[in-house]
Image (cartoon, rainbow, N blue to C red):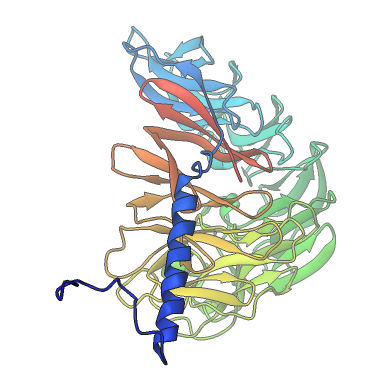
Length: 507
């Protein structure tokens, strides 16, 4: 006898009419279950190949004020306390001379294995720029006044004040090029070093307020100065570096942002790329942007300091402002490429200071942050832009990066009311979870992966990640992400009292 309470198997129906569909579904379910069991019995994918090595150990009884590494981590430098109450720098385990102050304004390695730069003040209150342990008589150095080539930094230049004339005259600005001190002048710009390390250029200001282009120690041209109401204020009202900018292009030509008879111009060697009635100094971007004189606020202008150049093509991009009402809501800012619009999109404000325009190595594609609403406020409407495509809106966007082929955009952004929570995005799709702070992401050389780092707390504890996953914890990030090979990513990080390099294989 059959049990009248016996339950039929799930999915089972009569074999007549619609029941045949049920049979087919049941058979399909069995096949899917068999496939699931088979896949579950297969070994899990191999984890990403890892190689971790300790580069240095910090002594437990030593107070380290600052710690940096060269780009590849092969050299480490730290500012440590001296027994007499002063300080000294330790370069890869070798202590250097004692000073009263160390590394307050400058503490950096140049690219590649790198030169080590730091400022120092000795017991006699004399100021020095120390390069690889050798002190140079250069007062008031700053990291934004250092320069080296993109190719590896074999040559370097740094501007400052003559140490024996600080505050003692109108002309005390000097430049140190590979250790040789040139000058003095009234003021100098940040230097530029060509990619092949063949040339070093800077703009200098003479006592008559005229500006000159100096290349390898010799003046090559003079620029007009103060000829228009929207020109640079007369000295000594401002720093020259706020108003001019130099960049060497991949073919060795020099891009210059400097005065011209009509106002302000962009030159490629002697070729005029663009001219503007006015300019916006480098340190006042965003809603507070103002030209030097009130009558210039309606004039077209360029944002000094925003110039970026392509790595493999003689192409430059920068922010420019169109004419219009200064306090209106007009979209007046756009990205220019060699004097023509690089994107059809217009923005209310340029990207904030430090958020650079991204450009592909061939110069054909650009990425940038575009604010069309109140920048960062409750009515913010900010987009991440790749050429003519925009992703968003977000409350804030930071750190755009383009894949080498120009096909994808990575960036960090915040949404909603909590502007302290950041995520990494790729083409509008979130990759990471939210973190209180994230560094700008970077693409792998083949554009397939996005590597990033984020902070977990204010103590510096953080995580490194690839695409949507985290791969390591750190107590401080020192360098990276680096790509020593197309299929590898690396970071140099602090783990407790150890400086560690982590190399990770990419699939």
